[in-house]
Image (cartoon, rainbow over all chains, first blue to last red; front, side, top):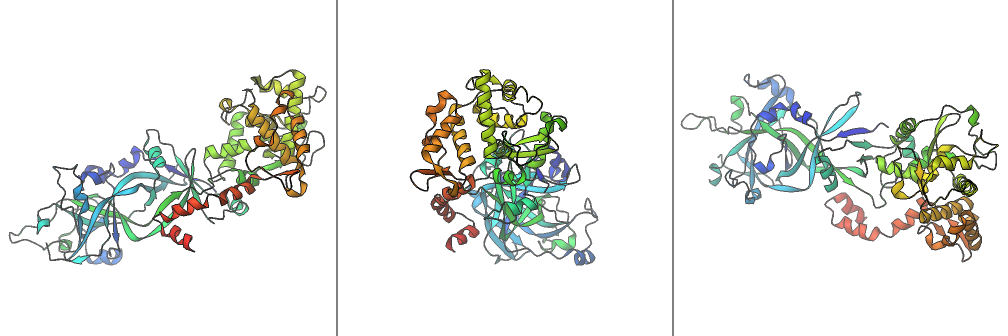
Length: 155
Length: 396
């Protein structure tokens, strides 16, 4: 059975994702990675309308950079209420994070250091046409929402 | 509300979603992957035939992650949580959609929309975890099934015809052999270093007699090489404890009248030399052994075990202890005879059905008895694990 190569992260992968390079990363600096990738874990699932239906009812913003290729659906807002850009070394803020889903539901969570770092792997075609994997990023923290959403007033 | 002042980040779902896998790293792997010249790793699984021949009791279909020197078993662990992969986004969403997140406009008619956004580009429901089973990984069981058995003694016509060397193909150079070994290694789900370790342990060799093939010599064949080698060294005055040229040793092995047909292929001699030479001087498998000197302790042990494996491989063929010790001594050069005592053999490599007899225990059988002991700490370890598969396994 042919073995599958797993390449360490290279500069090339960053070049492939120009969006994440040019955009400012709004996450607290602890959660920022070179590629901009971060991990958010939550209990349950977020239901997003399925693609076909959605595309018919909602037209994507014509001003979006690549209207044909990507399309974003708003889910809610992410907040780190105790985080201050002026004091990024203080890690107390990690204890509290909010995820608003829609306007009336809120999940309370925290930022956790992963017990073991996680490599984010992506598949691509190798030189010989075979499948290969690449470590795109190594993530060391996650935003974790383990409790169920609670109803809130609109903020 | 206190939260009102803090910065909020718009959270969106991106389409199309991308495919990612999450791999939990061990500290060593993290170090390896973040090092300056990080090596390319490999995901290996045995060929279908090998998977059937070498059954792993702990897993049926498996994939091993191999670094140049280490092997890890990969296990997919499902999560009931959803794990999203986020990246920064321009947050370009349609005005109609904003209502999902914010009231359309505040009193002043301005949108209260966060100006920064992250978007989820993938959702994973599992992570890949790595572990090393208690026994570790070895290439030997796979090599034993892959390589052809070379069992020709130099004093008979051989059970397997290796073909006359007169009709042999051009001798292979080191690069050819390396290529052939690599082709074997592809199907063996362990790291390159562990593969080479196993290859060397078995004295495996590539030979281009009638056809190019990879062989593993039987204990009998290895013992034959050793005897011939000691004989030749004595006749030619080669001191095997000091550095000698492997080329000279090969010449000493050949009979003068037999020069056209060597008693065994030269790569086999080299494989044996590599196996018992002084560890620090052992060249990489890719390099030729030019100089060598034998390590007395390693050598005596190897000869004893090889002799036992050749003459008393199973209980039913057990031989007398004193007979074994005498024969072992007879295989060694004169000055080493005193070294041949049972305590020099690897722990567990022999068993005595009764106080006067002895027989060899195959490494594969040895491991099982050795494995039975450390289950205690391993079981205790499982209790501390975060993985409920392991937790439940212990309770069953």
